[in-house]
Amino acid sequence: MSISVVKVSGEKVKAMWDKRLIEIFNDIFIKDILKGNRLGGDTSLEWNPIKRYVDASDDWWESRLKVKPGAQKFRTSGIDFEFEWKLDQMFMGVVATGDKA
Image 1 (cartoon, rainbow, N blue to C red):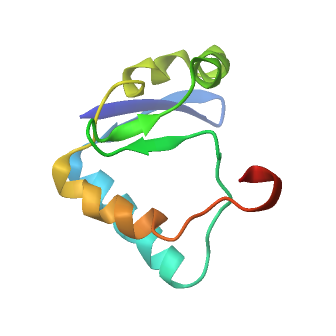
Image 2 (tube, rainbow, N blue to C red; image 1 turned 30 degrees about the vertical axis):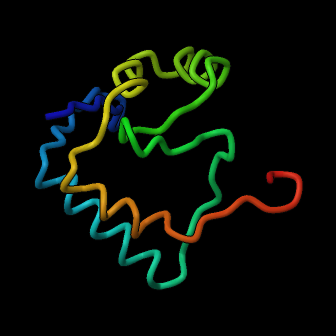
């Protein structure tokens, strides 16, 4: 289970992300993509199919960890195998073009 802390009306509130909530989030994300909604992404990230996590340069991690130190655990953490196919649906067909390629 993952815990995120966010501020709501000036108070810190903990969000508990268990497998069920992650699955719900992924399903909503996929439905939105199927409607044609897709956000731009960071082209300095790369999927590692062997380790099943996102690879990024040390510089990328250092800049992100200054903002969100708690993200360190995601630097080398893989995803649950059962969610991998959902991520495939979310990001299938995403390519870099122009100056981002």
